[in-house]
Structure formats: C-alpha cells, structure tokens
Length: 552
Image 1 (cartoon, rainbow, N blue to C red):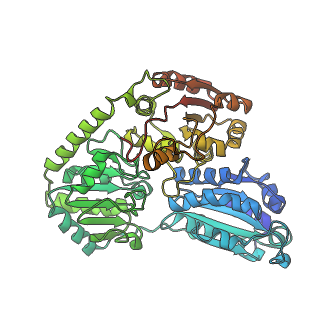
Image 2 (image 1 turned 90 degrees about the vertical axis):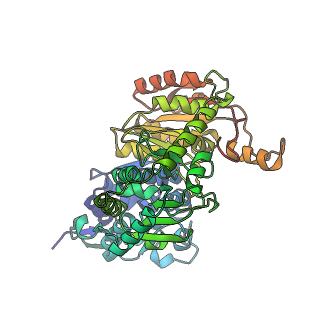
Image 3 (image 1 turned 180 degrees about the vertical axis):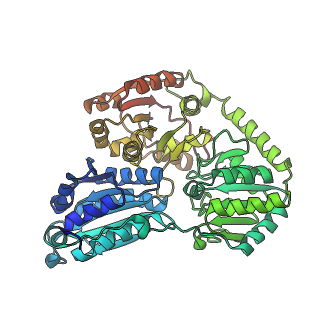
C-alpha cells in the first residue's frame, strides 16, 4: 500500500516521478495547494511576471531538452494568458505540460469569480485537454499528459484541476517510473515504402533535400549529411530546421521561409526530385504553398502529414533517423552516387548570392544606425559552439536566414504561430534547463514592449542571458509590409518614440550597452560574456532595409 496524499501533493509527486526540475508560472488562490508542496522537493518554482512568459519558458525548455516544460496558471485570466505561448508550442511541436485550475466542482457553470470554459479556450491549441474532477484520477492524468506531450509529434497538454480536488480530496500514491507509461516507439519504416522512395530518388538527376524540425527531434543530422553526400544533393532547411545540420556542412544552402533567400527557392524549384524530411510543409515554410516542388518524396513520423499539402511520388512513415539510415544503406549497397552537376550549380549560385548580399550598403559595418546584413555578418563571427539562439517573431528572425551555425548549436523561433513576445521567456527556460550553454535572446523592440516584465524575472534568476535587442523604433516587419503594399507614408500604428532600453533594463538590475554600428557588436559581446550576469546589447538598427518581398 502506498501513502495517502492530498490532491495537490499528488500532482507534485508525479512531477517528481518524471523528473521535473522547474515549474514556471504565476500563482493564484487556486494554485496554492500545488505550489506549496513544491517547497518540500527539489523542484523550483520560478514565478514570471506574466503567464505568457511562463508558457514560453516551458516551450523553450521543451524545444531544448525534448522533455516537457512545465507551466502553471490560475483559473480564468491566468489560464487565458497562457494561450498564446501554448499556441506557439503546439504549432512548432514542443512538449509542454500546462497545469491550470478551476473553481470548485459544485460551483461549475454558476458564474463564479474568474470562471471560463477552459476546454473551449484550450481545445484548438493543445494536443490534449484533460479535466481532473477526482483525486483518484490525478496520477493517471499527469502521466497521460507526460506521455501525450512526448510521443508522436510533441506538443502541449493542458491538465485542468478543480479547486476542491486538489485542496480537499486525497488518494493513495502508487509510484511508477516514466518508462512504464511512456514508451518511445521505434517507428520503423515499411520496406516497400523505402523501396518506392529509393526508386524515385535514383531515377532523378537533380535532387534537393528539404529538412525540418523532425530532423532535430529524431537526431538525424548525420544521416541527412550522409544522404546529401551520396546523392550530391543540396540541403534546404525550414526555419524550424535551422541548425539541424552544422552550418559548415559543404552541401547546406540555407533556410527557405517567407523571407528566405532566392537561392533556396531556386534549389527547390529547379530540382526534379525534392526529398522532404521531418517537415509538415506549413504555410510559413512554403510561402503559403507557393513553392513549386516536383516529384516529392516525403519522410515523416506522422502518416497524415504525408501528401497533405503536396502530392508525393513516394511517402515513408517512420522515425527520420532510422528511415534515412536504412535508405542510405540501400544506396551504399548498390554503390549509388548522384550526379554532382546540380549541386555544383546551386553552390555557385549561393556564392554569387552571398557575395551580392555582402557587397551592398546593408552590409556596411561602419553605417550608423547599424545596417541589418552587417549586424548578421558580425553576429556570425561571435556565435560559439554549444549555444542557444532564441529568436523572436518579426524582422530580427527574418534576417537570421543568412547565418551559419557552429557545432552543438540550437536555434529556435516561433515559426508557425508567429507569437511575438517569445524570446525572453523561452531564453529563460533554456537557461534554467541547461546552465552550461550560452543563451542569446534575439528580439525586436516591438516584442520587448510586450514582455518587459520578464527582464525582472531573468535578473532575479541571475541567468547570464545575453539579450540582443534590435531597436528600429517600430513594429518593423509590419511597417515594411505597409510600405511594400500601400506605399510611402501610409503607416498606421507601427511607429514608436526613441527609447533607451538599456537604461530601462538597468532599472531591473541588468547591465547593458548600446551599439550604433555593426562593427561595435564584437566588443559588446565581450562585455556581456565578461559580465557573467544578464546583459542587454541594444542595437540601433536601420529599419529602412526591407525584408519585403524577400530578405535580400
């Protein structure tokens, strides 16, 4: 027989069981019987200044570690404040467990204070919503959340507790180990499907690989690189697939997204076979399905993703690492080697494009305010191995398409939901998860304005996050879209006054410096790294260089 525990204590017991180390959240009256017993464990409660920060922190933790990040919010407005961050985790396949709370069961539906229908609120932005109306189901619900968040396509799960269930009810705790309720399947590909893919690929002369987040999740970098070498195929990534392959890999072209480079579009559209690996081919990755891809061979863990947006010549369902390993073995066994003509052509076009990109005024490292391409050129020199670059929505992320990343590097961005206000919270989650990694939060002044309070959270936690702020005194991406579509001077609601954000960060106890020219960025990073604490680098960015229609 196990010991009997109050409902809130059972929640914490299962958190301990699957190895949770941090819970991010904002407490409320309904949460107290869960947050209080955390004090008697090794699990830390990190209180953010807004529930969106907690959701994004859990998302960052999930993306970086593959283990569910945990966030918590009280009923009603606390719960609704989680929604945007959870939407980002859902659309970009990040494992998260959100603990939310209701009023008492007897009062459900009566219009109690802060009451809202959580099932309706969360239903479209999570993998599963689990209401808990009895303490006897708490352990099952928590384990179900863990299993659902991790397996298949990862994503957020919402567990909703009624107040009397966690405060007044009790049940026996029966210890389990995660391996007994969360079995990660091998998902072996079907032999006939692999043979069909093989036949399409070897029958093609100009093959391009298009890789996404599934390559990261499955750890298939080496298999992708081997396939690229065998086929002599260029590699294009999605934004979620950036850093899935080392930036120095000789066949890597770069990312294709709404604001990707013209050479990546060329690589995909001029190929006579596109091998899609671990990408669900979302609107963002495909220019709203405007990319013309022929003879598609699609590898995906989730069968329903295959052929959903592009008809396939062959489809292979299974783990990317295992599937590509078997395909590579088939190709090696038959000593197949692809023609290098197409690869060499694309690589030469990439060289021309990059030379052109780095020769215009946008690449002038002496320009004041700083030119965007020049800033990326200098940032490229600064990035270190074993680091994390957390990028917010908007122009700061659009320009990163030209970066090449070193070994053991993690890139994350709110790609498919585009939720501004991601970077600070997610960077906090990454810093809490892996203290041995350098964490850089790259965001614009628009996103910072939505999440200023999380500067205090980062300061209080004393995590040495480097906050790289691109300040163009505007919602820059939308301002540039207005210019592109409506013409000069037709701006509505996109401009801000000039604000000294470094001075503002100082009020939260964060040191910083202002960069007015790209050439000053390396020295600023030296200061940040020497500081050993959170540090803000505010780059005064020239917003006149538009990413519309493309970032070149």
